[in-house]
Length: 265
Image 1 (spheres, rainbow, N blue to C red):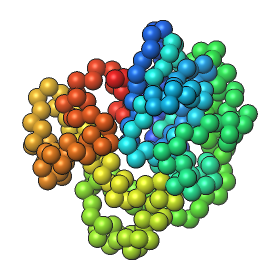
Image 2 (image 1 turned 180 degrees about the horizontal axis):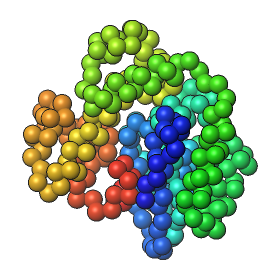
Image 3 (image 1 turned 135 degrees about the horizontal axis):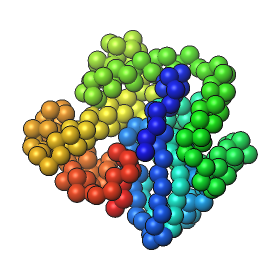
Image 4 (image 1 turned 120 degrees about the vertical axis):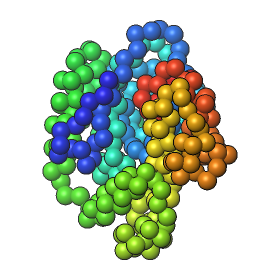
């Protein structure tokens, strides 16, 4: 279930997602890159890294992902995912986004007790709408502080990339921003954790995802890949597997898409 933030928070928060699982069996899940950063809030979720078998914190931030991460959950969960605009995590952590790229950061390590009431509300299965309303107040209070002037530039370039569905060359970005490719790359990686080229590739991939999801069972992969700006289908499949870990056809066959970039395997 997806919820929109109030207007004044939309430049910083894309949306909230509420997920509930009442089954007690083990689920394999994958979070793959969509260019965003975010916060996972839960009260009693048993989530483990598939690679290391280590248990994830009950609540955690995740930085911009270069690819995908695999987890498995045991038992029931009741959680809220806060999907940030990529640069918002940098504002919250007050550190370069390069440092949080591909990282899982425990909420307790950053905010200590400030987010504990939200975990307790989720543990007690309080209405997700009530929890989200309180989160809106929390983030609004936080944003009363001054942010770096670079954000106006970052937001403008990000919107330019989104408007063009990721089909943007380095030269076009230089002309639009007034900065050299290297200058813009440094600013993007510091604020968003990704280079403009990597972010553009992710946005183009998700534009292709939107096309195949709309086409449902009637896909012409070659035509849709060309429409999304891929020179050939082999390029698309290689990019898709690098970022999602699946081919486009395998993704389409995935039954439980809890969010566009969060799927059950």
